Picture 1 (cartoon, one colour):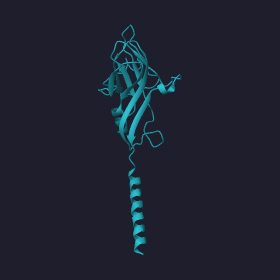
Picture 2 (cartoon, rainbow, N blue to C red; picture 1 turned 180 degrees about the vertical axis):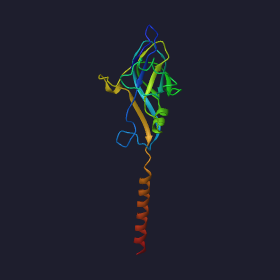
Picture 3 (cartoon, rainbow, N blue to C red; picture 1 turned 120 degrees about the vertical axis):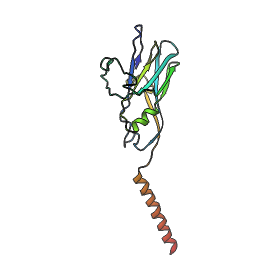
Picture 4 (cartoon, rainbow, N blue to C red; picture 1 turned 90 degrees about the horizontal axis):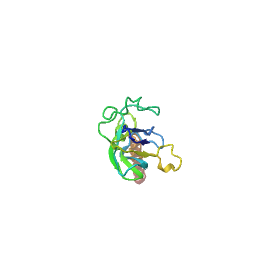
Length: 179
């Protein structure tokens, strides 16, 4: 993920998405869960100057794929019309290494039924930064990572079964005592 306005001062953006986040299989967030935190961690490998201006992460509201380009997106992603109006998180990048962005709002919106189109990362600085991508092979621990903390909520049917089993156990105990 490299975006550097370069000597021409042109804006550059990066798109990032984690697919298949929600569902019933292992390594997915259950649809009945309560999400308490969500953080994207990126590894910055190249900073021309320190610190790098404001790096912002916006939830996308428009679809894109790996073939999307600046031109196919009609001059890049338009924040506020192809994204949520307010960034999930913004901060300066102080040094080479890991940096994290709070994206709890996006994950809660997707769990609530919004479509997961990922995020656009924008830089309001005239200088650039480079982040490691999912194809990075030198050290896979530096690849983009999404960490989500959630509390699973049992299905209503399973709560009823647990309750019925407890009532049945009490009935058996009472029957044994009365003999």
